[in-house]
Amino acid sequence: MFPFDDDPRTACIVCNHVLNKEEAITYITHDEDGMWQFLCDKEHSMDDARIVSLEEVYALGPSIGEVADMPCGCFFNKKK
Image 1 (tube, rainbow, N blue to C red):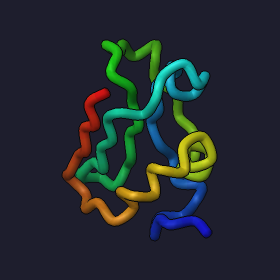
Image 2 (image 1 turned 90 degrees about the vertical axis):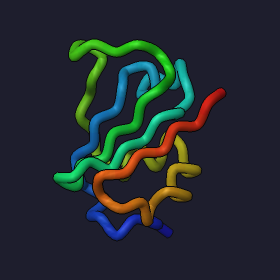
Image 3 (image 1 turned 60 degrees about the vertical axis):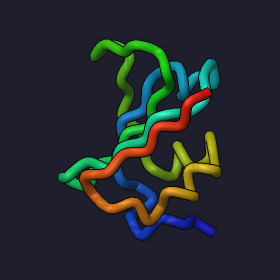
Image 4 (image 1 turned 30 degrees about the horizontal axis):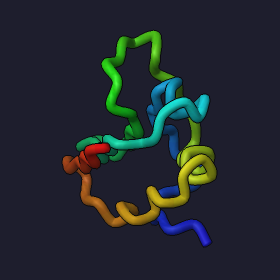
């Protein structure tokens, strides 16, 4: 069951390191505008950013469901 109230097709920013399964998601933001970001611990440039659906990110790492109720304007940083 999809744990987010957001539409599964909601656009999210994810770094290519996470998308390519090279790194784990360690930094999550739920921006003021409602957009989600799922990043790793590496430094990022704009070239590293990808836009995918929330459903795709959830399929990559279902543990993100633990922050499904995070309010807009908040972030979660999980150190390795």
